[in-house]
Image (cartoon, rainbow over all chains, first blue to last red; front, side):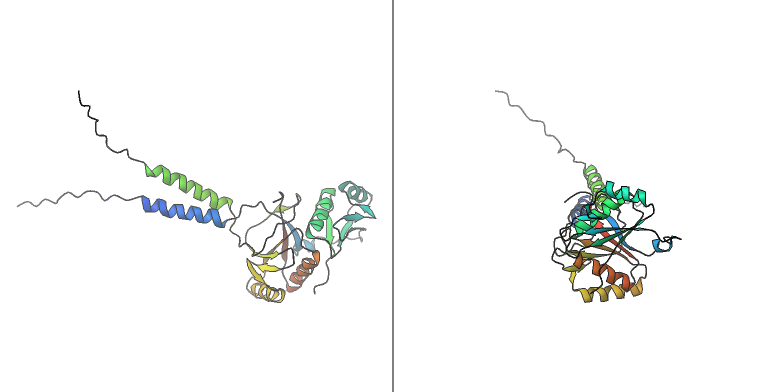
Length: 131
Length: 135
């Protein structure tokens, strides 16, 4: 006697649960991620420290940031042009930023931005003592 | 009157495969574009500057609120506890990268002493988060 195996229907893979899981993942990533365009400014860098060792003591340009957040160079309002002119007179000068404690973060960042635009190479922020 | 019989049509088969393709594409897009950072328990809008460099991923984030409140990786924390936590992280990972996400209107007395304290603790890489576009 010959036995014949009954033909079975092919098992259908249902795609709906897969779509459900992907949808949940999609919503999760959309909600939890942040899409802000962020950049950074270095504050402490130990790697660069070894390179900056000029043979002759470089002249220093001091930028003060007032409590209202305004940056001043030699008593005048700081602009990229005024700092670039001062840097032309004293190339490779050390640029020090002395902020008032009352000024805000935006004031400091704006002063660093102007100094970077003017081409300051050796830029430092005078930091207040740790409390 | 003649009776018109509508021919019975088989229900149209919706191809779910194309839907899966689209959702998968969107999923990969949002995973790549988004940044999975822990958000601070207070509002922080970073200072605006076009002179920033691109922000690397990873590391630890310290958020500074406008009133000087601090948060470490999305969790509100006091300053002594924060420095203790940083010290314990440093013990495991000496090359720790710290991002400071400070509010644009936060006073520098709340930021600069913190940077000094981090440097004294031995953190070699501290950056300040800025944004090229105002929020």
